[in-house]
Amino acid sequence: MRHRSRLKGLAVIAIGGIVLNLFYESTGPHWKTVSSQITWSDPPAGVGDFYIAGNEIMSLTFADPVVTLKPAGEWKVPTVAEPTEAWMNSAGETLNRRTVNFFRGTLDHGLQRFLQAPGQHTAWWHSRDGQVHLISIGWLDYTSQHSADDLVSRQTRVWKSLDGGRHWSQMAWPEHEDIDDLLFIDAQHGYAIGRGPTVRRTSDGGESWQLIALPPDAVVPSGRRRNLRAVNLGPDGTLRVAYHVDPSATGPARSVVYGLPPNQQTFVPDIVLPNQTVIRLASTPATTSGYALYALSLLDDEGGKDTAPDRARRAGVLSTWTDTQPARVRQVMTFDMKLIVNGLDVGRDGLLLVYATDPGQAIDDPPIPLMISSTDAGRTWKQNADGIVYHNRYFDQDTNTLYSLLDERLKKLSFPIRHSPASQD
View (cartoon, helix red, strand yellow):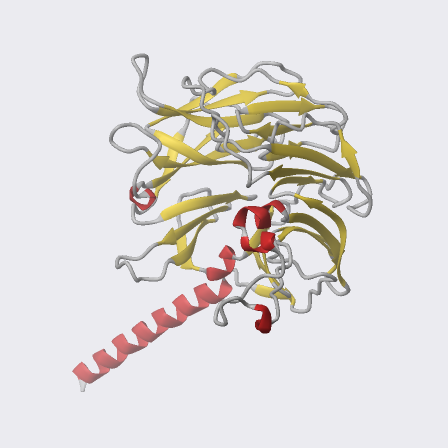
């Protein structure tokens, strides 16, 4: 009887532990449906980037041209369908006809299209209230011969709206320079970063752009053009860029981060990360003591190069430092080597979100999308399989809220905030 009572007591303890675990899981953040009836006046091929401001929703999408088929009786081979026009059978011609589309509307009344332009590459900045927008649209000719540096003909245009995207005007921009990122601290002051690399600054909302001298080693010695893989605009207006430097007689392989303070003309060194390739830079909101920066990186291969045959074999690492003490950089987390890390969002009050994929062990294993999160600035971590985050997503740093949009359904995942967010623009 005593032994049976002891077993019964252990069972009660075990059940109690399970209940406590379930309670802990139930009190954590969960996805909630914001709307399941988001409608489009002209449904795009995929949602693309989107932004939520109160009840307003904005989206920047790509759309492929409509391909139609001849009647079956006109097919040369009865079992092989034929397009109506010859260009419809060419991948290059189809890509040349792809368009960029801007939609705006409300969660309950749907979205309308306000801008359409030919292009296959975009960058987008918007004010917090969703009223001021700058969009760069790059068009590449996929049917032309490649030039010496393996580029095709390109044309980049910049569009601006001051009324929430309802009306647009084209801004002055050197059309031969593409844009990968548009980063603004407010509606007047910001940067355009493009391939080359190139960095341009504006202080008049995009009316004019000043070319900024690049930091050391940003240009590849061979002359090959490249993109800056990771950029960030801090809450104090400091632009930071990260790039990889291959090993040489003067130093080992490393990633370097340079900063450009506002109203300064020259980049200054920030940190060095040996044997790493930075793929994402992010900063926290400003506090009375400054702000923190985070770099998500991949460890280099044994030769110190930033390329490897199997990207999944390069372990991901997360490092952090502060704007006031960049010399005190420390590594927060090293992720499992089997994971492919590819995204980072940084919120308030220690919230860190790292996005990764587990490719599986066998060749036929389906990849598992993961969200690896910390709510205490990286001291503890939680890993969840979460396919929702690999839909189109948007993270609102002001509210610590992650949004996901797929077709007509908008969901959100809210994390707690201990301090009041900064005021809106």
